[in-house]
Image (cartoon, rainbow, N blue to C red; front, top):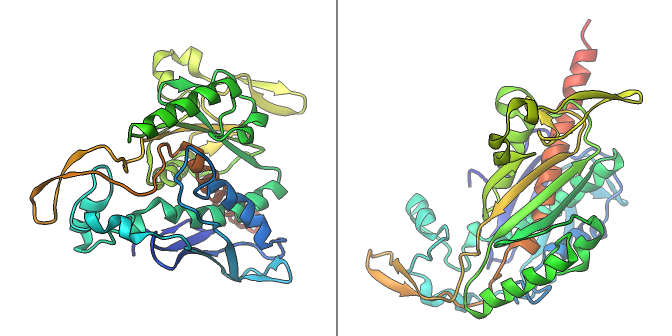
Length: 361
């Protein structure tokens, strides 16, 4: 299927459906001699897996990863790495009553008209379950980036109208919404549970900080680093927008307020502020990369909604089954994974560019 691959020097293709035998990914371009075990990948999958708290879907999946190729005696070989995550807790009968009905907010209608066929069992290929494969691949990228001093941290900045007042990175994994503000986390949980009890859902905003990024990642014009990150983020099914640095708030300032002044900091050049979010002209400037992604309310809700059937007849639909009342807590590791894959790919591209430059006569 076109559109199932991502990346340039680090290239991956995901496969599988929500209610098929499993989902997986093939990653090509991972350098050799990187220490890698299934446990390195599993720790990230455990953060994304369903059924982990009262504010996520109750579907139970252990999401155990299997390394099928590309690793020998605990190290990458440079060959393509194939990873498989088997589905173990499908309940396809939950969807039998809507096999001829298009769910509002989902890809059912557009997928059906594009291909003339669709897997109605949880959305098939367009299901959020596909992101498990991305997280598995991203775990490898995160480990590689850590070895060169790059760290990626995402967290739930807001849920509905409730926004974190403080950002304490130590608090992110201490609460079930992955919010850096413990007090606001309590309010977020209450809001999500209230929406769930009403058969509804809520959205939010995920913020990401990338530190240790070397200067020079990203290319001018079409392959700007922020453009590539935007592509990566908006390829996640639940995302509806992205902003870097001050984002839309920058429109309220003047250039004199928005520009990041260069200063000398010891032996280095840095900026006094970071309104640009660590990217200038599409190229990383060494400052922390900062961006926020808008997450829509989950589309699968049990409230009655108007829709149409495949025969163009009106229908009222109530989507039952096991669904997230808020995607934010589980999309945090997905965003980290796609960020890691993009940054690692950009780093490999830059290494090739530097090698080519140094190799000139």
